[in-house]
Length: 254
Image (tube, rainbow, N blue to C red):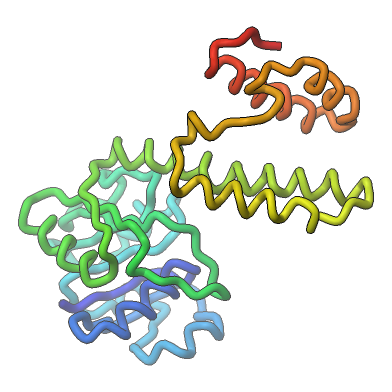
């Protein structure tokens, strides 16, 4: 199975590495509109910067920003090939007409500096027809043991869930860290609690797992916290999440 990857970001880097190291897959080319960063030096395949010069392949994988998927796919100098994007929040229909369309979406956040075990990353696939879907399944199963068929609408809701799970929680950890820093409290004090929270998340139901003043409707503690929080945005976040927890468990909101 021959593959061309178009893009030069974090996902393109990790996909290129795992595909190049797989004996059942053949990464024939990397294409990016600008020069590749030094990270890509470890990848030996042919690299180009002119999309009009992409070579023949079974699958073309677009690892580009959501807002340019249509534009980049329209620049491909051929028709009738299988072209897929890797976005969680973009429908398959955003790919330009003329080629067969598909999606290969790895459900993970990527950075070039952190090694990734693709075997453990869920990959969601979608295609316009059964033949292409099976081809994408074969590709995905070479990369991961967790492959899911999912249409564009389902994938958008999955992406929303991932934002809550990953991006929003990371921001809450940042706010927690900021509070500690402003009060000269070592964040190390909270790391065991963070570790336990993450450990429990893998084995317990989230509904049953909830604890804290909002779960108990402990208004004395809640109001004490609100009086101490000075930043309006942080105070509003505290209020909104508190109200959501209270509503979930049938209590009276703020």
